Image (cartoon, rainbow, N blue to C red; front, side, top):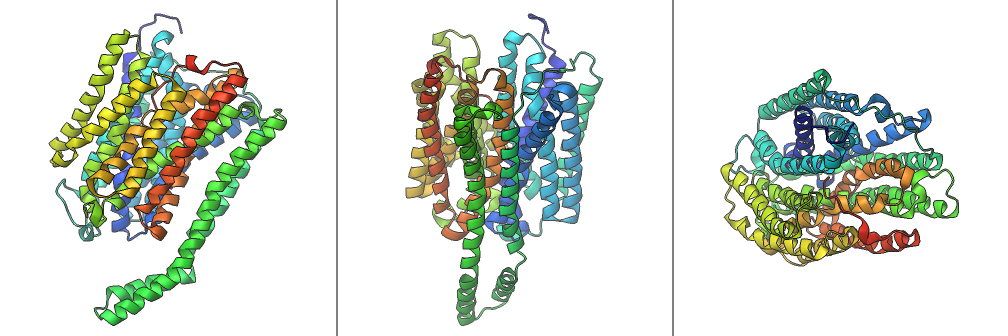
Length: 574
Protein backbone atom coordinates (compact mmCIF):
# COMPACT_ATOMS: atom_id res chain seq x y z
CA UNK A 1 0.00 0.00 0.00
CA UNK A 2 1.33 3.40 -0.95
CA UNK A 3 1.92 6.13 1.56
CA UNK A 4 -0.61 9.03 1.69
CA UNK A 5 -3.35 6.70 0.41
CA UNK A 6 -6.74 7.78 1.73
CA UNK A 7 -8.26 5.67 4.49
CA UNK A 8 -10.86 3.08 3.49
CA UNK A 9 -13.48 4.35 5.93
CA UNK A 10 -16.31 1.86 5.14
CA UNK A 11 -13.99 -1.06 5.90
CA UNK A 12 -12.55 0.74 8.94
CA UNK A 13 -16.00 1.44 10.38
CA UNK A 14 -16.95 -2.21 9.88
CA UNK A 15 -13.73 -3.30 11.57
CA UNK A 16 -14.40 -0.93 14.48
CA UNK A 17 -17.76 -2.63 15.04
CA UNK A 18 -15.87 -5.92 15.35
CA UNK A 19 -13.55 -4.36 17.95
CA UNK A 20 -16.65 -3.16 19.83
CA UNK A 21 -18.17 -6.62 20.09
CA UNK A 22 -14.96 -8.20 21.41
CA UNK A 23 -15.22 -5.93 24.44
CA UNK A 24 -19.03 -6.08 24.56
CA UNK A 25 -19.19 -9.88 24.93
CA UNK A 26 -16.08 -10.20 27.16
CA UNK A 27 -17.21 -7.62 29.74
CA UNK A 28 -20.79 -8.87 29.60
CA UNK A 29 -19.53 -12.19 30.96
CA UNK A 30 -19.02 -10.48 34.33
CA UNK A 31 -22.81 -10.11 34.59
CA UNK A 32 -23.54 -13.47 32.95
CA UNK A 33 -21.46 -15.31 35.59
CA UNK A 34 -23.49 -14.36 38.72
CA UNK A 35 -26.72 -14.80 36.73
CA UNK A 36 -25.78 -18.37 35.73
CA UNK A 37 -24.64 -19.15 39.26
CA UNK A 38 -28.15 -18.46 40.57
CA UNK A 39 -30.07 -19.69 37.52
CA UNK A 40 -28.32 -23.07 37.37
CA UNK A 41 -27.47 -23.35 41.11
CA UNK A 42 -23.67 -23.46 40.60
CA UNK A 43 -20.74 -22.95 42.93
CA UNK A 44 -18.30 -20.11 42.27
CA UNK A 45 -15.87 -22.31 40.32
CA UNK A 46 -18.59 -23.68 38.05
CA UNK A 47 -19.85 -20.18 37.28
CA UNK A 48 -16.29 -19.12 36.37
CA UNK A 49 -16.25 -21.78 33.63
CA UNK A 50 -17.80 -19.05 31.47
CA UNK A 51 -14.40 -17.34 31.52
CA UNK A 52 -12.68 -20.71 31.05
CA UNK A 53 -14.68 -21.44 27.89
CA UNK A 54 -14.32 -17.92 26.50
CA UNK A 55 -10.60 -17.32 27.04
CA UNK A 56 -9.38 -20.88 26.44
CA UNK A 57 -10.84 -20.49 22.92
CA UNK A 58 -8.49 -17.56 22.30
CA UNK A 59 -5.55 -19.71 23.34
CA UNK A 60 -6.52 -22.83 21.39
CA UNK A 61 -7.34 -20.78 18.29
CA UNK A 62 -3.96 -19.03 18.33
CA UNK A 63 -2.15 -22.29 19.14
CA UNK A 64 -3.79 -24.19 16.26
CA UNK A 65 -2.95 -21.39 13.84
CA UNK A 66 0.67 -21.49 15.02
CA UNK A 67 0.90 -25.31 14.70
CA UNK A 68 -0.59 -25.31 11.18
CA UNK A 69 1.66 -22.43 10.15
CA UNK A 70 4.75 -24.18 11.53
CA UNK A 71 3.92 -27.39 9.68
CA UNK A 72 3.23 -25.59 6.38
CA UNK A 73 6.12 -23.18 6.77
CA UNK A 74 3.86 -20.19 6.07
CA UNK A 75 1.69 -17.99 8.25
CA UNK A 76 -1.83 -19.38 7.71
CA UNK A 77 -3.55 -16.03 8.32
CA UNK A 78 -1.11 -14.34 5.94
CA UNK A 79 -1.76 -17.04 3.34
CA UNK A 80 -5.53 -16.59 3.58
CA UNK A 81 -5.18 -12.82 3.72
CA UNK A 82 -6.31 -10.57 6.57
CA UNK A 83 -9.62 -9.83 4.81
CA UNK A 84 -10.60 -13.48 4.35
CA UNK A 85 -9.35 -14.40 7.85
CA UNK A 86 -11.62 -11.78 9.42
CA UNK A 87 -14.55 -13.04 7.32
CA UNK A 88 -13.90 -16.62 8.49
CA UNK A 89 -13.66 -15.40 12.08
CA UNK A 90 -16.93 -13.46 11.86
CA UNK A 91 -18.78 -16.43 10.38
CA UNK A 92 -17.37 -18.71 13.07
CA UNK A 93 -18.57 -16.28 15.75
CA UNK A 94 -21.99 -16.22 14.06
CA UNK A 95 -22.02 -20.03 14.33
CA UNK A 96 -21.23 -19.64 18.04
CA UNK A 97 -24.12 -17.19 18.43
CA UNK A 98 -26.40 -19.81 16.84
CA UNK A 99 -25.13 -22.45 19.26
CA UNK A 100 -25.74 -20.01 22.11
CA UNK A 101 -29.34 -19.46 20.98
CA UNK A 102 -30.00 -23.22 20.88
CA UNK A 103 -28.42 -23.71 24.32
CA UNK A 104 -30.52 -20.90 25.83
CA UNK A 105 -33.69 -22.35 24.28
CA UNK A 106 -33.07 -25.77 25.89
CA UNK A 107 -31.66 -24.27 29.14
CA UNK A 108 -28.39 -26.24 29.08
CA UNK A 109 -25.42 -24.57 30.82
CA UNK A 110 -22.78 -26.71 29.06
CA UNK A 111 -24.38 -25.75 25.74
CA UNK A 112 -23.98 -22.07 26.62
CA UNK A 113 -20.31 -22.68 27.42
CA UNK A 114 -19.86 -24.36 24.03
CA UNK A 115 -21.59 -21.42 22.33
CA UNK A 116 -19.31 -18.91 24.05
CA UNK A 117 -16.28 -21.06 23.18
CA UNK A 118 -17.20 -21.01 19.47
CA UNK A 119 -17.86 -17.24 19.54
CA UNK A 120 -14.44 -16.65 21.12
CA UNK A 121 -12.74 -19.05 18.69
CA UNK A 122 -13.96 -16.74 15.94
CA UNK A 123 -12.71 -13.74 17.94
CA UNK A 124 -9.27 -15.38 18.13
CA UNK A 125 -9.01 -15.52 14.34
CA UNK A 126 -10.40 -11.99 14.01
CA UNK A 127 -7.91 -10.55 16.51
CA UNK A 128 -4.97 -12.27 14.83
CA UNK A 129 -5.79 -10.45 11.59
CA UNK A 130 -7.49 -7.24 12.77
CA UNK A 131 -4.55 -5.13 13.99
CA UNK A 132 -2.36 -5.53 10.88
CA UNK A 133 -5.51 -5.20 8.75
CA UNK A 134 -6.29 -1.82 10.38
CA UNK A 135 -2.84 -0.64 9.32
CA UNK A 136 -3.55 -1.75 5.74
CA UNK A 137 -6.73 0.32 5.47
CA UNK A 138 -4.90 3.56 4.81
CA UNK A 139 -1.60 5.40 5.02
CA UNK A 140 0.86 3.27 7.03
CA UNK A 141 1.99 6.43 8.84
CA UNK A 142 -1.45 6.72 10.46
CA UNK A 143 -1.84 2.98 11.05
CA UNK A 144 -1.23 3.26 14.81
CA UNK A 145 -4.07 5.79 15.07
CA UNK A 146 -6.49 3.34 13.45
CA UNK A 147 -5.38 0.54 15.80
CA UNK A 148 -5.80 2.87 18.79
CA UNK A 149 -9.26 3.85 17.52
CA UNK A 150 -10.18 0.16 17.48
CA UNK A 151 -8.85 -0.24 21.02
CA UNK A 152 -10.81 2.77 22.26
CA UNK A 153 -14.05 1.45 20.72
CA UNK A 154 -13.27 -1.99 22.17
CA UNK A 155 -13.12 -0.41 25.63
CA UNK A 156 -16.41 1.42 25.02
CA UNK A 157 -17.88 -2.03 24.31
CA UNK A 158 -16.67 -3.21 27.72
CA UNK A 159 -18.65 -0.36 29.32
CA UNK A 160 -21.87 -0.92 27.37
CA UNK A 161 -21.74 -4.75 27.39
CA UNK A 162 -22.66 -5.28 31.08
CA UNK A 163 -25.64 -2.92 30.73
CA UNK A 164 -27.12 -4.53 27.61
CA UNK A 165 -26.43 -8.12 28.67
CA UNK A 166 -27.68 -7.36 32.19
CA UNK A 167 -30.97 -6.11 30.73
CA UNK A 168 -31.19 -9.15 28.42
CA UNK A 169 -30.67 -11.52 31.36
CA UNK A 170 -32.81 -9.85 34.03
CA UNK A 171 -35.40 -8.32 31.68
CA UNK A 172 -35.29 -5.04 33.62
CA UNK A 173 -32.95 -2.50 35.18
CA UNK A 174 -35.00 -2.70 38.39
CA UNK A 175 -33.59 -4.86 41.24
CA UNK A 176 -34.87 -8.44 41.51
CA UNK A 177 -33.89 -11.00 44.15
CA UNK A 178 -31.49 -13.85 43.40
CA UNK A 179 -34.26 -16.27 44.36
CA UNK A 180 -36.37 -15.02 41.43
CA UNK A 181 -33.62 -15.55 38.85
CA UNK A 182 -34.30 -19.28 38.38
CA UNK A 183 -37.82 -18.45 37.15
CA UNK A 184 -36.82 -15.73 34.67
CA UNK A 185 -37.58 -16.23 30.95
CA UNK A 186 -34.52 -16.02 28.71
CA UNK A 187 -36.26 -14.79 25.57
CA UNK A 188 -34.34 -11.49 25.60
CA UNK A 189 -31.03 -13.41 25.63
CA UNK A 190 -32.20 -15.21 22.49
CA UNK A 191 -33.06 -11.87 20.86
CA UNK A 192 -29.66 -10.49 21.87
CA UNK A 193 -27.73 -13.32 20.28
CA UNK A 194 -29.94 -13.26 17.18
CA UNK A 195 -28.97 -9.61 16.74
CA UNK A 196 -25.30 -10.28 17.52
CA UNK A 197 -25.21 -13.25 15.13
CA UNK A 198 -26.82 -11.22 12.35
CA UNK A 199 -24.34 -8.41 12.90
CA UNK A 200 -21.47 -10.89 12.57
CA UNK A 201 -22.92 -12.15 9.28
CA UNK A 202 -23.59 -8.60 8.08
CA UNK A 203 -20.03 -7.54 8.89
CA UNK A 204 -18.67 -10.61 7.06
CA UNK A 205 -20.84 -9.74 4.05
CA UNK A 206 -19.63 -6.14 4.00
CA UNK A 207 -16.02 -7.31 4.03
CA UNK A 208 -16.63 -9.96 1.37
CA UNK A 209 -18.46 -7.75 -1.12
CA UNK A 210 -16.33 -4.63 -0.66
CA UNK A 211 -13.96 -4.44 -3.62
CA UNK A 212 -12.07 -1.56 -2.00
CA UNK A 213 -10.86 -3.72 0.89
CA UNK A 214 -7.37 -5.12 0.16
CA UNK A 215 -6.94 -8.90 0.62
CA UNK A 216 -3.89 -8.38 2.86
CA UNK A 217 -2.09 -11.51 1.74
CA UNK A 218 1.34 -12.10 3.30
CA UNK A 219 3.47 -14.98 1.97
CA UNK A 220 6.49 -14.41 4.19
CA UNK A 221 7.99 -17.73 5.39
CA UNK A 222 7.25 -18.76 8.97
CA UNK A 223 10.25 -18.80 11.27
CA UNK A 224 10.79 -22.39 12.55
CA UNK A 225 10.31 -23.01 16.27
CA UNK A 226 9.80 -26.75 16.79
CA UNK A 227 10.93 -26.77 20.42
CA UNK A 228 8.54 -23.92 21.22
CA UNK A 229 5.72 -25.73 19.42
CA UNK A 230 6.35 -28.99 21.29
CA UNK A 231 6.52 -27.18 24.63
CA UNK A 232 3.20 -25.43 23.99
CA UNK A 233 1.57 -28.73 23.00
CA UNK A 234 2.82 -30.47 26.16
CA UNK A 235 1.61 -27.50 28.26
CA UNK A 236 -1.84 -27.80 26.66
CA UNK A 237 -2.06 -31.55 27.28
CA UNK A 238 -1.02 -31.12 30.93
CA UNK A 239 -3.57 -28.34 31.30
CA UNK A 240 -6.38 -30.56 30.07
CA UNK A 241 -5.24 -33.44 32.28
CA UNK A 242 -5.42 -31.15 35.31
CA UNK A 243 -8.92 -29.86 34.58
CA UNK A 244 -10.52 -33.23 33.74
CA UNK A 245 -10.42 -34.59 37.36
CA UNK A 246 -12.01 -31.34 38.57
CA UNK A 247 -14.87 -31.67 36.10
CA UNK A 248 -15.34 -35.37 36.89
CA UNK A 249 -15.38 -34.68 40.64
CA UNK A 250 -18.77 -32.98 40.25
CA UNK A 251 -20.21 -36.37 39.26
CA UNK A 252 -18.37 -38.32 41.96
CA UNK A 253 -20.09 -40.31 44.70
CA UNK A 254 -19.11 -37.72 47.33
CA UNK A 255 -20.45 -34.86 45.23
CA UNK A 256 -23.78 -36.66 44.71
CA UNK A 257 -24.00 -37.29 48.47
CA UNK A 258 -23.43 -33.58 49.14
CA UNK A 259 -26.11 -32.67 46.60
CA UNK A 260 -28.59 -35.01 48.29
CA UNK A 261 -27.78 -33.50 51.68
CA UNK A 262 -28.41 -30.00 50.28
CA UNK A 263 -31.80 -31.22 49.02
CA UNK A 264 -32.63 -32.54 52.51
CA UNK A 265 -31.46 -29.24 54.00
CA UNK A 266 -33.80 -27.28 51.74
CA UNK A 267 -36.76 -29.42 52.80
CA UNK A 268 -36.36 -29.30 56.59
CA UNK A 269 -37.13 -26.67 59.20
CA UNK A 270 -35.90 -28.61 62.23
CA UNK A 271 -32.95 -26.65 63.67
CA UNK A 272 -31.18 -29.71 65.08
CA UNK A 273 -31.42 -31.52 61.75
CA UNK A 274 -30.20 -28.38 59.93
CA UNK A 275 -27.15 -28.22 62.19
CA UNK A 276 -26.39 -31.92 61.67
CA UNK A 277 -26.82 -31.70 57.90
CA UNK A 278 -24.56 -28.63 57.67
CA UNK A 279 -21.89 -30.41 59.72
CA UNK A 280 -22.10 -33.48 57.46
CA UNK A 281 -21.89 -31.33 54.30
CA UNK A 282 -18.84 -29.52 55.64
CA UNK A 283 -17.20 -32.83 56.58
CA UNK A 284 -17.67 -34.19 53.05
CA UNK A 285 -17.09 -31.07 50.97
CA UNK A 286 -13.90 -29.71 52.57
CA UNK A 287 -11.49 -32.50 51.48
CA UNK A 288 -13.23 -32.61 48.07
CA UNK A 289 -12.69 -28.87 47.57
CA UNK A 290 -9.04 -29.16 48.63
CA UNK A 291 -8.51 -31.91 46.04
CA UNK A 292 -10.13 -29.78 43.34
CA UNK A 293 -7.96 -26.84 44.36
CA UNK A 294 -4.83 -28.99 44.11
CA UNK A 295 -5.67 -29.94 40.51
CA UNK A 296 -6.36 -26.30 39.60
CA UNK A 297 -3.04 -25.22 41.09
CA UNK A 298 -1.49 -27.98 38.98
CA UNK A 299 -3.13 -26.42 35.90
CA UNK A 300 -1.61 -23.06 36.77
CA UNK A 301 1.80 -24.66 37.34
CA UNK A 302 1.56 -26.38 33.94
CA UNK A 303 1.71 -22.94 32.33
CA UNK A 304 4.16 -21.32 34.72
CA UNK A 305 6.59 -24.25 34.73
CA UNK A 306 6.23 -24.74 30.98
CA UNK A 307 7.28 -21.14 30.32
CA UNK A 308 10.11 -21.31 32.86
CA UNK A 309 11.28 -24.55 31.21
CA UNK A 310 11.37 -22.76 27.85
CA UNK A 311 13.24 -19.87 29.45
CA UNK A 312 15.96 -22.04 31.02
CA UNK A 313 16.39 -24.40 28.03
CA UNK A 314 16.57 -21.56 25.53
CA UNK A 315 19.26 -19.91 27.66
CA UNK A 316 21.41 -23.01 27.20
CA UNK A 317 20.67 -23.66 23.52
CA UNK A 318 18.68 -21.18 21.42
CA UNK A 319 18.27 -23.42 18.37
CA UNK A 320 14.67 -24.48 17.68
CA UNK A 321 13.06 -22.06 20.12
CA UNK A 322 12.26 -19.30 17.64
CA UNK A 323 11.05 -16.17 19.40
CA UNK A 324 11.17 -17.98 22.74
CA UNK A 325 14.94 -17.72 22.76
CA UNK A 326 14.47 -14.13 23.95
CA UNK A 327 14.04 -13.96 27.75
CA UNK A 328 11.99 -10.74 27.58
CA UNK A 329 9.41 -12.58 25.47
CA UNK A 330 9.09 -15.70 27.63
CA UNK A 331 8.82 -13.78 30.90
CA UNK A 332 6.55 -11.30 29.10
CA UNK A 333 4.28 -14.20 28.09
CA UNK A 334 3.97 -15.11 31.76
CA UNK A 335 3.33 -11.45 32.64
CA UNK A 336 0.58 -11.20 30.01
CA UNK A 337 -0.92 -14.51 31.18
CA UNK A 338 -1.09 -13.21 34.75
CA UNK A 339 -2.28 -9.74 33.72
CA UNK A 340 -5.23 -11.06 31.68
CA UNK A 341 -6.04 -13.53 34.46
CA UNK A 342 -6.21 -10.92 37.23
CA UNK A 343 -7.97 -8.36 35.01
CA UNK A 344 -10.74 -10.86 34.22
CA UNK A 345 -10.73 -12.43 37.69
CA UNK A 346 -11.26 -9.14 39.54
CA UNK A 347 -14.28 -8.29 37.39
CA UNK A 348 -15.78 -11.77 37.12
CA UNK A 349 -15.74 -12.41 40.89
CA UNK A 350 -17.00 -8.92 41.70
CA UNK A 351 -20.66 -9.94 41.59
CA UNK A 352 -20.19 -12.60 44.27
CA UNK A 353 -18.17 -10.17 46.44
CA UNK A 354 -20.96 -7.58 46.39
CA UNK A 355 -23.40 -10.16 47.81
CA UNK A 356 -21.58 -10.08 51.17
CA UNK A 357 -23.26 -8.06 53.95
CA UNK A 358 -20.14 -5.94 54.42
CA UNK A 359 -20.15 -5.10 50.69
CA UNK A 360 -23.77 -4.03 50.43
CA UNK A 361 -25.64 -7.37 50.30
CA UNK A 362 -26.55 -6.73 46.65
CA UNK A 363 -28.61 -8.99 44.41
CA UNK A 364 -27.12 -10.15 41.10
CA UNK A 365 -29.39 -7.75 39.21
CA UNK A 366 -27.90 -4.80 41.13
CA UNK A 367 -24.23 -5.36 40.31
CA UNK A 368 -24.38 -4.12 36.69
CA UNK A 369 -23.26 -0.51 37.37
CA UNK A 370 -20.29 -1.75 39.42
CA UNK A 371 -19.21 -4.08 36.62
CA UNK A 372 -19.69 -1.23 34.14
CA UNK A 373 -17.52 1.05 36.29
CA UNK A 374 -14.81 -1.63 36.57
CA UNK A 375 -14.59 -2.26 32.84
CA UNK A 376 -15.17 1.44 32.25
CA UNK A 377 -11.96 2.03 34.20
CA UNK A 378 -10.23 0.05 31.46
CA UNK A 379 -11.76 2.42 28.91
CA UNK A 380 -10.65 5.50 30.85
CA UNK A 381 -7.03 4.31 30.92
CA UNK A 382 -6.97 3.21 27.28
CA UNK A 383 -8.48 6.44 26.02
CA UNK A 384 -5.90 8.37 28.01
CA UNK A 385 -3.11 6.05 26.86
CA UNK A 386 -4.13 6.45 23.22
CA UNK A 387 -3.26 10.16 23.37
CA UNK A 388 0.46 9.32 23.00
CA UNK A 389 -0.22 7.78 19.57
CA UNK A 390 -1.04 11.21 18.14
CA UNK A 391 1.45 13.94 17.32
CA UNK A 392 0.18 16.55 19.77
CA UNK A 393 2.34 19.23 21.32
CA UNK A 394 3.52 18.53 24.86
CA UNK A 395 1.18 21.12 26.38
CA UNK A 396 -1.79 19.70 24.43
CA UNK A 397 -0.96 16.16 25.56
CA UNK A 398 -0.90 17.23 29.20
CA UNK A 399 -4.21 19.02 28.83
CA UNK A 400 -5.80 15.99 27.14
CA UNK A 401 -4.46 13.71 29.89
CA UNK A 402 -6.57 15.76 32.27
CA UNK A 403 -9.65 16.12 30.10
CA UNK A 404 -10.02 12.69 28.43
CA UNK A 405 -10.27 10.60 31.65
CA UNK A 406 -12.80 13.06 33.10
CA UNK A 407 -14.93 12.94 29.92
CA UNK A 408 -14.69 9.13 29.84
CA UNK A 409 -15.76 8.88 33.51
CA UNK A 410 -18.67 11.25 32.88
CA UNK A 411 -19.71 9.09 29.92
CA UNK A 412 -19.75 5.93 32.10
CA UNK A 413 -21.80 7.65 34.81
CA UNK A 414 -24.12 9.13 32.18
CA UNK A 415 -24.78 5.87 30.36
CA UNK A 416 -25.55 4.04 33.60
CA UNK A 417 -27.77 6.90 34.80
CA UNK A 418 -29.73 6.83 31.52
CA UNK A 419 -30.25 3.10 32.14
CA UNK A 420 -31.96 4.03 35.40
CA UNK A 421 -29.21 3.15 37.90
CA UNK A 422 -28.56 5.38 40.92
CA UNK A 423 -24.89 6.32 40.49
CA UNK A 424 -24.66 8.81 43.38
CA UNK A 425 -22.69 6.38 45.56
CA UNK A 426 -20.15 5.83 42.75
CA UNK A 427 -19.54 9.51 41.92
CA UNK A 428 -16.64 9.65 44.38
CA UNK A 429 -14.81 7.02 42.31
CA UNK A 430 -13.73 10.18 40.48
CA UNK A 431 -11.04 10.48 43.18
CA UNK A 432 -9.55 7.17 42.01
CA UNK A 433 -9.63 8.46 38.42
CA UNK A 434 -7.61 11.49 39.55
CA UNK A 435 -5.05 9.11 41.10
CA UNK A 436 -4.83 7.34 37.72
CA UNK A 437 -4.28 10.68 35.96
CA UNK A 438 -1.40 11.37 38.38
CA UNK A 439 0.04 7.93 37.54
CA UNK A 440 -0.01 8.82 33.82
CA UNK A 441 1.94 12.01 34.46
CA UNK A 442 4.50 10.10 36.55
CA UNK A 443 4.85 7.40 33.89
CA UNK A 444 6.11 9.80 31.19
CA UNK A 445 5.06 7.38 28.39
CA UNK A 446 7.87 4.93 29.27
CA UNK A 447 6.55 1.34 29.27
CA UNK A 448 8.70 -0.14 32.06
CA UNK A 449 8.14 2.86 34.29
CA UNK A 450 4.42 2.78 33.40
CA UNK A 451 4.18 -0.89 34.30
CA UNK A 452 5.91 -0.37 37.66
CA UNK A 453 3.70 2.59 38.58
CA UNK A 454 0.40 1.05 37.47
CA UNK A 455 1.42 -2.35 38.89
CA UNK A 456 2.10 -0.58 42.18
CA UNK A 457 -1.30 1.12 41.95
CA UNK A 458 -2.98 -2.25 41.42
CA UNK A 459 -1.03 -3.84 44.29
CA UNK A 460 -1.94 -0.99 46.65
CA UNK A 461 -5.60 -1.09 45.60
CA UNK A 462 -5.91 -4.87 46.08
CA UNK A 463 -4.17 -4.71 49.47
CA UNK A 464 -6.53 -1.95 50.67
CA UNK A 465 -9.47 -3.99 49.36
CA UNK A 466 -8.34 -7.09 51.26
CA UNK A 467 -7.95 -5.31 54.59
CA UNK A 468 -11.07 -3.13 54.46
CA UNK A 469 -14.76 -3.51 53.61
CA UNK A 470 -17.68 -1.37 52.48
CA UNK A 471 -17.31 1.39 49.90
CA UNK A 472 -13.59 1.84 50.61
CA UNK A 473 -12.91 -1.77 49.62
CA UNK A 474 -15.33 -1.59 46.67
CA UNK A 475 -13.55 1.50 45.34
CA UNK A 476 -10.22 -0.26 45.86
CA UNK A 477 -11.25 -3.34 43.86
CA UNK A 478 -12.82 -1.17 41.14
CA UNK A 479 -9.49 0.67 40.91
CA UNK A 480 -8.08 -2.62 39.62
CA UNK A 481 -9.66 -1.70 36.26
CA UNK A 482 -7.81 1.63 36.22
CA UNK A 483 -4.55 -0.13 37.08
CA UNK A 484 -4.92 -2.85 34.44
CA UNK A 485 -6.03 -0.48 31.69
CA UNK A 486 -2.61 0.18 30.14
CA UNK A 487 -0.85 -3.07 30.97
CA UNK A 488 -1.56 -4.90 27.72
CA UNK A 489 0.30 -2.33 25.62
CA UNK A 490 3.18 -1.92 28.08
CA UNK A 491 3.80 -5.66 28.53
CA UNK A 492 3.41 -6.28 24.80
CA UNK A 493 5.88 -3.59 23.74
CA UNK A 494 8.49 -4.63 26.34
CA UNK A 495 8.17 -8.30 25.35
CA UNK A 496 8.65 -7.96 21.57
CA UNK A 497 11.31 -5.26 21.45
CA UNK A 498 14.55 -6.54 19.95
CA UNK A 499 12.98 -9.69 18.42
CA UNK A 500 13.73 -8.65 14.82
CA UNK A 501 12.46 -11.24 12.32
CA UNK A 502 10.78 -13.13 15.19
CA UNK A 503 8.51 -10.17 16.09
CA UNK A 504 5.39 -11.56 14.39
CA UNK A 505 5.90 -15.00 15.93
CA UNK A 506 6.48 -13.43 19.32
CA UNK A 507 3.26 -11.47 18.96
CA UNK A 508 1.39 -14.71 18.24
CA UNK A 509 2.85 -16.30 21.40
CA UNK A 510 1.73 -13.28 23.44
CA UNK A 511 -1.82 -13.46 22.08
CA UNK A 512 -1.95 -17.09 23.24
CA UNK A 513 -1.43 -15.87 26.79
CA UNK A 514 -4.98 -14.54 26.85
CA UNK A 515 -5.28 -18.07 28.28
CA UNK A 516 -4.74 -16.43 31.68
CA UNK A 517 -8.39 -15.36 31.55
CA UNK A 518 -9.37 -19.03 31.35
CA UNK A 519 -7.18 -20.32 34.21
CA UNK A 520 -6.91 -17.68 36.93
CA UNK A 521 -10.62 -16.68 37.36
CA UNK A 522 -11.78 -20.31 37.90
CA UNK A 523 -8.82 -20.77 40.28
CA UNK A 524 -9.95 -17.70 42.21
CA UNK A 525 -13.51 -19.05 42.13
CA UNK A 526 -12.46 -22.33 43.70
CA UNK A 527 -10.30 -20.48 46.23
CA UNK A 528 -13.43 -18.46 47.06
CA UNK A 529 -15.37 -21.70 47.64
CA UNK A 530 -12.75 -22.65 50.26
CA UNK A 531 -11.65 -19.42 52.00
CA UNK A 532 -14.40 -16.98 50.98
CA UNK A 533 -14.76 -14.58 48.06
CA UNK A 534 -13.19 -11.60 49.88
CA UNK A 535 -10.02 -13.47 50.83
CA UNK A 536 -9.73 -14.91 47.30
CA UNK A 537 -8.56 -11.49 46.12
CA UNK A 538 -5.13 -12.44 47.42
CA UNK A 539 -4.54 -13.85 43.92
CA UNK A 540 -4.52 -10.42 42.20
CA UNK A 541 -2.10 -9.21 44.90
CA UNK A 542 0.36 -11.97 43.93
CA UNK A 543 -0.25 -11.27 40.24
CA UNK A 544 0.55 -7.57 40.50
CA UNK A 545 3.77 -8.44 42.36
CA UNK A 546 4.96 -10.54 39.39
CA UNK A 547 4.04 -7.82 36.90
CA UNK A 548 6.15 -5.31 38.85
CA UNK A 549 8.99 -7.88 38.96
CA UNK A 550 8.79 -8.32 35.18
CA UNK A 551 8.95 -4.55 34.63
CA UNK A 552 12.12 -4.40 36.72
CA UNK A 553 13.89 -7.52 35.36
CA UNK A 554 13.15 -6.75 31.70
CA UNK A 555 15.39 -3.69 31.97
CA UNK A 556 18.37 -5.98 32.59
CA UNK A 557 17.58 -8.26 29.63
CA UNK A 558 17.19 -5.36 27.22
CA UNK A 559 20.29 -3.60 28.52
CA UNK A 560 22.30 -6.82 27.99
CA UNK A 561 21.04 -6.83 24.37
CA UNK A 562 22.16 -3.22 23.88
CA UNK A 563 18.62 -1.80 23.79
CA UNK A 564 17.80 1.55 25.36
CA UNK A 565 14.52 0.89 27.12
CA UNK A 566 13.64 4.57 27.48
CA UNK A 567 13.38 4.91 23.70
CA UNK A 568 10.60 2.32 23.40
CA UNK A 569 7.22 3.83 22.66
CA UNK A 570 4.34 2.27 24.56
CA UNK A 571 1.06 1.53 22.84
CA UNK A 572 -1.95 1.37 25.06
CA UNK A 573 -4.53 -0.26 22.83
CA UNK A 574 -5.77 -3.80 23.49
